[in-house]
Image: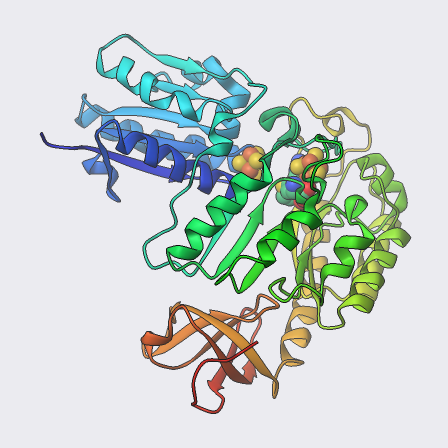
Length: 447
Ligand code: SAH
Ligand code: SF4
Ligand code: F3S
């Protein structure tokens, strides 16, 4: 029997990437094989995101292009999943009448039966209920063949209520995966050649919180630190208010835990942080950064910032720049505030004009570019442990990997080194990467 073809396009965060892999795994059992050409597909699934208005707009215009394919191939079926699907539910059919399928963030496991119903011509399918236990949390994603690092989902949903954020509305409340199940998956991945694990969740450091007396996030890190052949552990995203002294102390103590933390601050102004409902002050954030650097002087710290949150005045923005000067982030992701339906901030007074948001973003990004470059330059002359993960994108004769601090390094080397950790002397620094050469050609770098 000829296998049917599935094309999946993923928008949004890594959580959606994992969910797309799970969906593809499930549908393989229903006879669908992945294709990277949408023109070839019998079924197209778009995994959607709603974090900012722009994300939603991009998805709607992409769907419009798939609609044209359907005009040429009436057998083609188109479905949407993920956060925008959760938000709009059956209303998605009104906005895009050519859709056949809408599945929410808790309903991935229902895909096979929903697709079977489509094949039986039983009409459009929609499922967006929330479940007490999200079945897909226990499913395995499938890293690309030859991958060196991968993500492992440890929890889903979020119990915080940051005033700007749709995630708790669209992913539901926090659910943690049992520790033994996570360890089983990590062992399996180690056996398949994976050397680096990034633990994934909306708020990873509140892992286990809903199971009083059970293991917490630090326990999980310690347990993964014991898994043979896992050389590196990272995690994303952690919340400053839940960053415990015990977790801070694990940096520099757990050999596999990389010297990097992504710790979104969102703003440097106490007034704005309060309106955002973040649960910490700028001073508390500075103190946590101090504690991290005391425990692990080499730690690299990256963050997220939103500019133009309702009520943000010039002096609040100046406080964010001041915090950046004090902390000196290794890298920063910055966004213009985008009002989202159903969030508290969308109804707040003091909405900031687009022009002001744009200007503040430019100023902030210029400052960060300077900091990032200087941080990168400070690595020149150092010998770094680089886990090689592939061929260099721009220089086919070179290979590429990451330092423990998560910087990209390109250097001349044999593709046979992919999957190993080698010592590389850093010779040049750029904004987005470093260059280097292998130090001492003998054997693998032992951390
Ligand atoms: N759970 C993570 C990630 C949330 S989404 C966390 O708590 O950090 C990633 C980033 O998108 C956030 O850190 C925030 O900086 C940004 N973001 C979320 N909602 C936004 C909105 N409405 N407008 C602009 N940026 C937003
Ligand atoms: Fe959104 Fe805040 Fe939860 Fe992150 S912690 S997902 S920003 S509500
Ligand atoms: Fe987007 Fe949902 Fe992730 S809104 S960022 S896909 S959790």
